[in-house]
Image 1 (cartoon, helix red, strand yellow):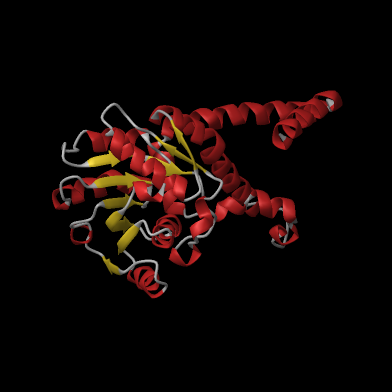
Image 2 (cartoon, one colour):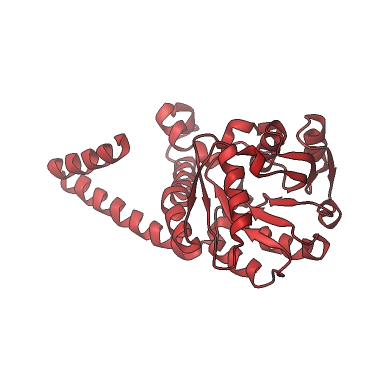
Length: 287
């Protein structure tokens, strides 16, 4: 499998948890000879170089992507299309650009509308992560036994698609191909909604003024486990909400309907209804 792909020079734009973990994997598996890190934060880039995650770094994206065979854009989703547009004139013919954003349709539409025939773009989304950010949180096993969704279109070059698919399989991911719109609807339900609920729950409890002390000091494992994702980067989730607005609003409305149903059962003292609701959820979760 490894012999199928090799990139002499790789440029990683956004050397954080995802970008950094991918860079480490590329180096360990011998998929790339040379890795350039590109980003805004000098301290993070210097750390990436010191840790051996990248070979060199620059804040100049146009300079960093020059002669790169593979360019991975691992930045907040709102900036992905802008970055691709910025670097296009600096890319060599045949270069492959891919991303790791958790919103696909709007980004894909914008990039394909400006993409020249000499440059290839494959939209991807490794469903992996932790609440930690920055290159120091990166580790190569991040993608193992996780799904990676790739959303090809009619314009996607099949040979290039195969290379990106193999790359993520080497990383340990189960690769799934699907349409961008389907991806966005699914992720709104299973990823974006849980983050909205976690943020809302933490803020709701923190804003309770009924007590003369911080009641979060009494939170146990359940609260901490459930709200762990509320520690995720605010900028990233702001962008996701704006770019996947319709799908997120749809699942929020569905969640509100279920919460209102539960509220009514509690208010009425509906013992049987509560049991059925909880057992239904337990059965789905246990499976």
